[in-house]
Image (tube, rainbow, N blue to C red; front, side, top):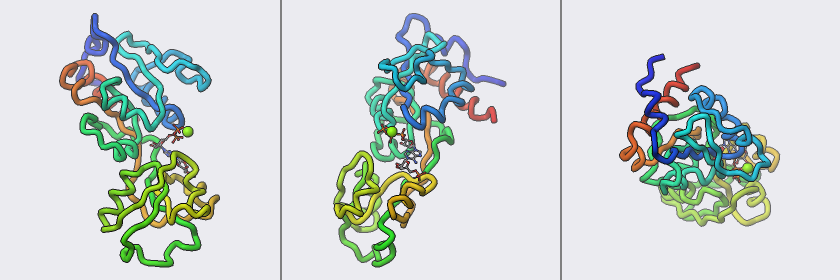
Length: 231
Ligand code: PRT
Ligand code: MG
């Protein structure tokens, strides 16, 4: 393996460790293999869902990891609290932080963001004739942008979970949410009527950190790039 970085760049002397923000939940489980291939071993309690700790040292003195909600990873990186992170592209699309650069698609936690509505109303009228629509979602910006591109005003009902219940209970016509197998939609008598985008997790970095600490941040990007080519 030819590595375009030096071991020294990963272990900067006499500077604070870099912080990598990692999401709890399903991405945490899926990113274990990539972290291992990148040579990152967080302290054992990192995978303990019951620990109260949020910041963990790793086998690299120059790198600590923090464990945060999937929806918050991009925010920690955008504000420079963490220099690197792993984050769903759904979250990147929603926040669209100019300070966040996403150099690598890690190809994990794949799904799609889609529109779904009750089977009874799906296909009963033509969305191109709508002027507004009420949508329940935890992605208000993605939903508004998607409908605005079709000349439709989206009235968004903000929910952070269980949006599949919302149309049946009469608070919206449809939902915008992540779909993987489609079984959650089916279980709630909803059908997918449009795909907005394919989603996967990305390596992200803070642009300022990449400029001010190019060796250290660049070395981690290179490590992850190598990790992806290891089959
Ligand atoms: O726990 P917290 O409230 O912080 O957030 P969370 O539960 O949304 O986080 P978590 O751990 O689920 O991780 C969310 C991230 O995982 C997203 O930002 C995506 O990048 C990624 N991801 C990939 C998914 C899915 N696939 C997925 N299927 N996140 C959520 N889902 C949910 C979806 O919202 C729906 O409820 O799974 C259900 C649909 O799955 P199917 O298989 O039934 O279609
Ligand atoms: Mg969760």
